[in-house]
Length: 310
Length: 287
Image 1: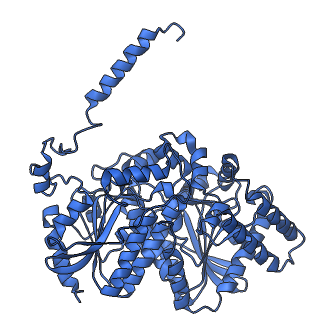
Image 2: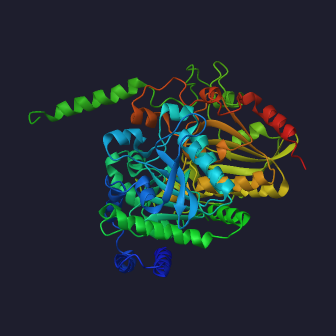
Image 3: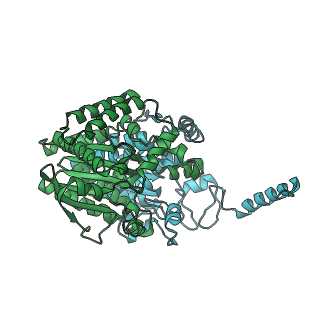
């Protein structure tokens, strides 16, 4: 398993060194660090090390979707509303220019101060958010715009109205929509990849995770409350889950790890955005020119193969 | 506190125990109706399809009994029965996952939480995918996902409509992120089936929550639910704790889902066989 992760990291390393390193010397410093990470990978999976990532993934200064949009895209035009009921502020969507061409972008959005957090509902979407995502996916598909999604949610919102408006069905349909798309799709988990709320917009040709992002079936606290009957066991749950990027790569759930600046993405947002942009662009370039039907078939086959059994 | 004697402690613990006994809701006999309190012998309940003759409460049905209720006698033939979960994470909570799996297999006699196979309903060929809540809460891990995906693939090649009967608490936490990946996996396989104009009828039994509702169970051509079945993405306790809202009495129940337009019909268990036969005839997917 570890050797698979190593292979993946080596692969990323190779890709990153292939990327034009014209943005200053700091990127090559990143390369060096990534190399060190490769060595670290074998030993650094203690409960503490994994919990550190959980804390970084939830860091209140961590860049959110719109921070990246601002730095990665030119000419961004935000699209609002699901065309049915409302505009869910926990998911932002829009079109903009990346690497010289128009792409569609969908991402969860958290807030930084109390007012904005409430407005964004802490990044927890209602079904209307996923319906907005679906209509933008459909728009992208119609016009042949590649789709980039940024995942950062504790989970879909568990509320009475959310259930009444069909939360489960919306998440199911959103995944089905992504599986059907005939355009290149890249998803990146940029913070918390929380369960159904995350997978709803993460069924992509390439799924990436930032180095300190987490991706899990339930929050560590939720899992601890159910399995250990004690929410304070979250640390244990987090390491039992292997929700960090290296383990997700080893399990074949993601296709690559996006390096972060030393100390985490919040330590240098500009550099974090450069690194994320380079990764997304290089994956989109690889997917360029593949026929819609082939993309669709490969995507289905990839997700169809997930799981371990005897 | 320092003055408290040992006898004080003993008294408290006895009171505490009696209090939970009097509460009475914690451990009712499984054959006592939670709706009206009537009690039944197991064979009585079985003869009534596990529906309370007094108040109509639908008791849970194990997968084997469910299949017997629905299909023509002797027509069921199980497929992919040998699939077993492995333990990709080396998961250990209070017990190792492998031990939980072994215990579940011994106590239920099942390989995992879903049985799939071909059958006939009123002489109409179909393929069943029946979940069993008694196997680790009907949770969906790699094996449940694989069985459903293979059922879709078998149906692409032989044209039999799929009847799925879900009863599940959601994704199997012990398989971590791979359990979450069973959502897009089952949906991918279902998409293949739907591209091939295959038919999927989804029956939602109590409870269908979490990952099940957020994947194939919501994507059938027709969705029907049993009366009183809980079908919500987040369970009532989670919603109450997170939002501190007072939940409506029918929160997440089939009746509420029908009202909000998420399912096509509520079908009482005694009618389920004939309703499925009607749908199989209407879709006309007999080859």
